[in-house]
Amino acid sequence: MPEILEVESYRRLADRVVGATIVRGWADAYSAKKLTSIAAWARSVKHRTVTGTGRRGKLLLLDTDGVRLGMRFGMTGVLLINDEAGIDGLFYGPHTFRSDWVRGGLEFDDGRKLIMHDPRRMARFEIDPDLSALGPDALALTKSQFAGVVATRGEGPPIKARLLDQSAVAGVGNLLGDEILFRAGIDPRTPTGRLNDDQRADLFRAFTQTMRTLQRRGGSHLGDHMDGRHPGAFCPLDGATMLTATIGGRTTYWCSSHQR
Ligand SMILES: [Zn+2]
Image (cartoon, rainbow, N blue to C red; front, side):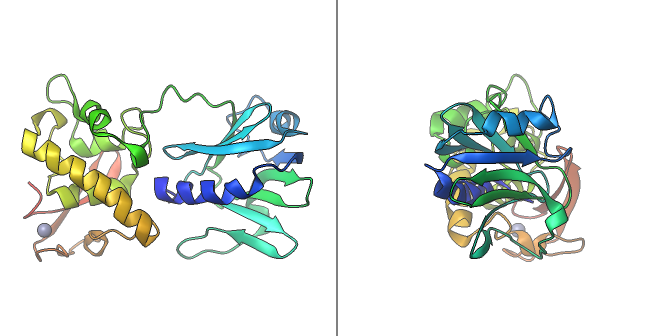
């Protein structure tokens, strides 16, 4: 699943169309689900020039001289550039390209196309997306913003659920959340409000370290805890039994020994 690190890679790919003018946009019924109509995408993007790219969490932003465009990648969405030389994009894991999995995109005056490829049909286009529901971006999270993420009244939700809450911090997906807690040595079930000062410091350090390290390695699926991510697995760090439960709606893995 594309998490923030993958979407940041899509943003860098999209940087290549900055300065290009859109001659045509198209969207299918799935990618247009958050729009007023399928035609809204084509109408809003025509003759616009791309002026820049941005990202908030897992939402990719494309600024134009008119509207701001948003792209969400769902479970399996991938951004591709199609030019005469072929298709250039960022597939990860096992993949196949099929033209009937193209959900929409933008065609530019120089002939290139920016394409949303998505077998599972959960990717969405947005026009002037509302950013007010999203917390600060996880890749640029400051210490004071982090203090806000772990601030609660009372016990609050389990820390894993809080990390996944996009209104608290935008961009932490399931794998990154588990990797951060694995590195911090914190039990994902711990109520956010019960983290002590040492745990908060460890968590912030692990948070920034995880983002940096996995970006360098090339994706959120390349974390240290991944080998422990199946039933009956042992902790890659200390060999203890790994535990699993659904927390914050997502399948969570953690070590029975070093995560407390
Ligand atoms: Zn362990």
